[in-house]
Amino acid sequence: MRILLSALLIFSLSACAVGMLTPNREFRTTDTFTLSKRTTNFIEGASSVGEALGYDIASVDRNGNAVTLTNNSSAIGVSLIGKMQQMNFTLTLRPDDRTVDVQVSAFGNMSSVTQEKIEARVSELQTALRKQFS
Figure (tube, rainbow, N blue to C red):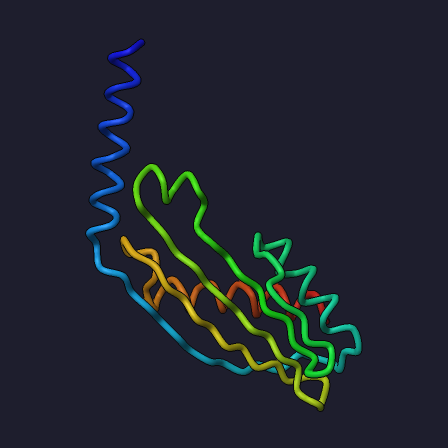
């Protein structure tokens, strides 16, 4: 048992060291899309979609009709292999009640943040929001 625990500790420390030595990457982008019809319950619907996709609600701005969704690294991933990532998606409904602005900010290491991965997440979010508000 002692050997097994020692091996696990050595593996975790070496994997964590590798993760911490990989360069950090940051990616930001903006996008805009249009819903098929006007909506009056954007914050509630966007929050619901975000939670269904596994995001946490980081902030709500009822005056600005905006919600920020976040996705943070798991403690296990950070402690075992040193992999970290944080993504923030700010969704803002314009005054026409149909146009949605998306601002994305992502930070991470170990290839967790790439343009392709972020654009795939934005596309997934847009698809889910269009379905929610159709």
